[in-house]
Structures are given as C-alpha cells and as structure tokens.
Length: 227
Ligand SMILES: Nc1ncnc2c1ncn2[C@@H]1O[C@H](COP(=O)(O)OP(=O)(O)O)[C@@H](O)[C@H]1O
Ligand SMILES: [Mg+2]
Image 1: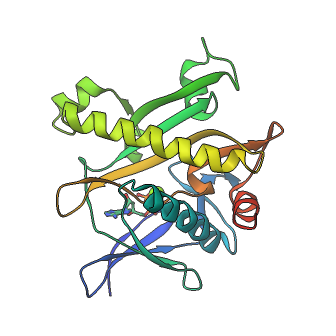
Image 2: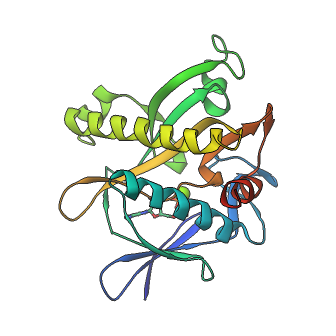
C-alpha cells in the first residue's frame, strides 16, 4: 500500500484495489496538551485514541448507510485502526463544514461581542477553508462561488446534508443524555460525481456536553459505543 498523505490525526494510503485506507493515529488536535477539535496542530497523543475514534466513526457511518445518506464508508478494521473508504476529490483543497447548536469555540472567539457562551444556535451551518497556514478562514456562499470552489447547487447540497448528518448525531447523543454543541464535517465528490460525506465522525471533530460538562473524545466514544 502506498502512503499518499500523512495528516494530523490519520495516515492516508491507496489500496491495491484503488480504494483509500485511513489509518487512525493516537494523535489528537489541540494545543499544549489540551484537546481542541478546532485546532490545526497535534496537541497530544493518547493511547487508544485512534481506535476509539474509528469505533465511533464506524458506528455513525453505518447509521448513515441505513438512512441512505451518501458517504465514503466501505469497511473498518478496528484492531488495525483502519477504515477503507471510497476515494473522493475535495472541493478546492478541502472544506470544513460546521454545524453549531450552541456557541463555543471559534464562533465565540469571533462573535463574542454579540454571542454569549453556550447560547442556542439552531443548527447554524458555516464553512471554513482547510488552510492551516491561514487558520482555516470562514468563507461564505458567494465567495465560494466566486473563487470557483463550490457552485450554488453544490453549496445547497452540502448544507442540506450537513444539517441531516448533524441531526442524526445529535439524536444519537440525546439518547445517552448527551448534548451536541457543534460538529465539523468534510465532503468530497465520489468517482461518479456525487457529493458524499468523507473523513470521520468522532469525538475528535465535535463538542459534546453532559449536564453542562464537556466530554473528551475517548470518554464520548466509551459512552456511545457501550450503550
Ligand atoms: N474519502 C476520502 N477521499 C479523499 N480524501 C479523504 C477522504 N476521507 C478523508 N480524506 C482526507 O484525508 C485526510 C485525513 O487525515 P487527517 O489527519 O484528518 O488530515 P488533516 O490533518 O488534513 O485533518 C484529510 O485531509 C481528509 O480531508
Ligand atoms: Mg482531519
């Protein structure tokens, strides 16, 4: 297998069958040893984090398949911490699509003049460019079109899928009395040109709280997978 990309939390390989294999590492994003799903650096390494992220990702992707929501999942090998997926082409050099139910993280840092921490946000969707060098700048629909990154139609499809997927995750967490504050998704185009969800859905790309208390990624995985 050929290593084609080494990311912050995963290594990406091309398989002999022409699929893609994501190897989940034990690295998580954050700064100075503190986890932060919005960070652009590896903040800490925790034994078992890769497997935990993959378990939760697998559970959510299987649920998406049951609902017929298009995604890249083919199968997972939990022991090896790998997931085989459909290779997709990204929009530009990649987008992050965030759905927010409560104001925390970068939303609060940007709009703190008007927003208060934990304020309800009604599943607000926003897009940022994957651009570590420029701290993932937010970008709106008009600019995405103008820069040739997304058509109006693609924007709408991505926005609608984001709301559906975030709702599914939110409902799964509510069953465990856990509240989803925000979640970050990635999309690409499959070889037939369909827009599909790619990457992962784990504690590493969402913020979840129980009784007002933030739940770190591995704890979230333990609660969700075991119940
Ligand atoms: N199905 C897919 N097709 C193409 N690229 C993908 C797919 N799923 C995930 N990726 C990409 O693989 C990389 C996964 O590694 P990760 O460590 O998360 O990278 P990053 O540091 O860019 O966040 C990401 O760049 C993600 O966009
Ligand atoms: Mg990533």
